[in-house]
Image (cartoon, rainbow, N blue to C red; front, side):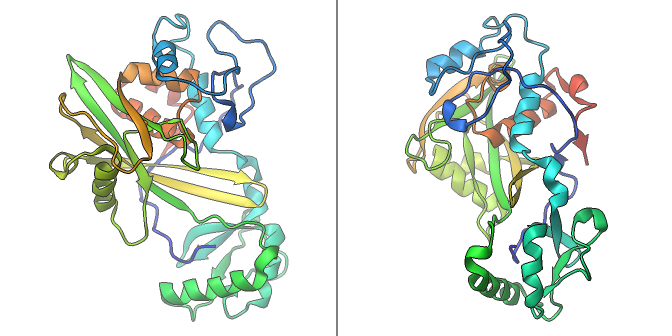
Length: 333
């Protein structure tokens, strides 16, 4: 129930799609708590048996001859999309929260009734017409015109309801940058490994540069800041980053409905540039051929989940060879 929201960009790439695919076994850290199917592992997949990994594991598994017969197996890509889009079948359990004719969030039907007593803050559907399949929605009272007024009023409601609130998650926005190098006619991606002391996804693979988007800071400005902090990229280089769109997904778990939007950038780096972390959040960087990075995404869960989506988008845009097979499974808008 956030009153202040950055509007989602029009024309973004959406990886929320209605496809069905069975999950094969994959090699991934136990800490992700993902489950694989109970069937036996095939020759083109890795067993869930490790709790951590090293750069040597990454390099070994990324080789094309590690699983010589899996070049056309797209299950691993579909798996990454499904991982970020949990619980989509429960979307109708939520009612849209609308501000100025735009959906800015969702409220669980079981909680929406509590908002009726705050008639100077919320406008609720008449009767029991909750649920998006009935066309109902919750909006803010017309007297709350400014973002500050809305934030204060909703904040007071949150304080009043306290423990009755099943869970609030602000819609998350971030900037993710693919830092790549063209070398001898082949593209390489700089990949980072997250610090083991980070509170989220410690020790997992990540983009060269990625970070949350604070309120009041433009995407481009934030990217320049993150480039310097996370990879030591000077503005003379980072200012050449290209905005290439956005990736969105939704994650539903119980009473929680979380939507994320990642603003994506590409930056072609000089061959001689070597990144170095400045803020202690990245342990190390490696330059890896893009085709090998694709193998790591398909075969493992080594990457922070939403990073996989952004790299899949990179593969699409840079002409890697699975776009025909994907065309019937993804929706672009």
